[in-house]
Length: 134
Image (cartoon, rainbow, N blue to C red; front, side):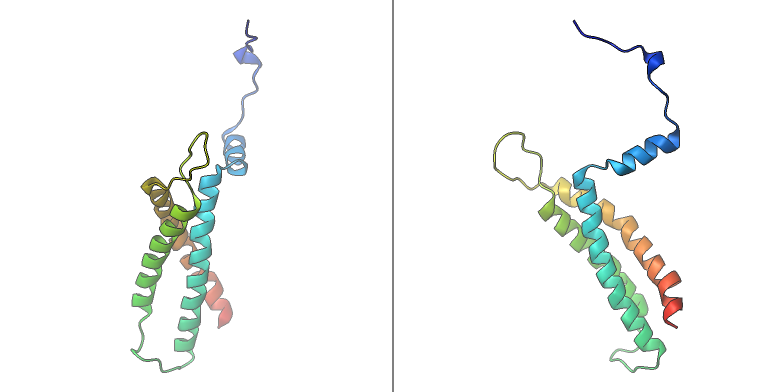
């Protein structure tokens, strides 16, 4: 015999409470995908900022001003490396057993996590950090 709760007795949570609970209890594969993409994006954004600051201070670099190309390469690398790292660190659930399986869905999770992260990190780098560097 099962003991069922009365649906009216369950407290209703607001939209904000539900989203906060989802944020605090995010699934590990999602957290790993976001962390992988975020770490790659931050490292590459720091490299881009160094290049941008060097150009703005009058450094003559081979090839001239290639900031647009650098941002395109940044986005491609964040998407590719974020997908690859997620593929490597997010194994497919196996149930019982010790065999670790990789799946292209892990790479897809990494790709879709990397898209907004690449944009957001570059916005923070260019719009917030860059003006502070002068």
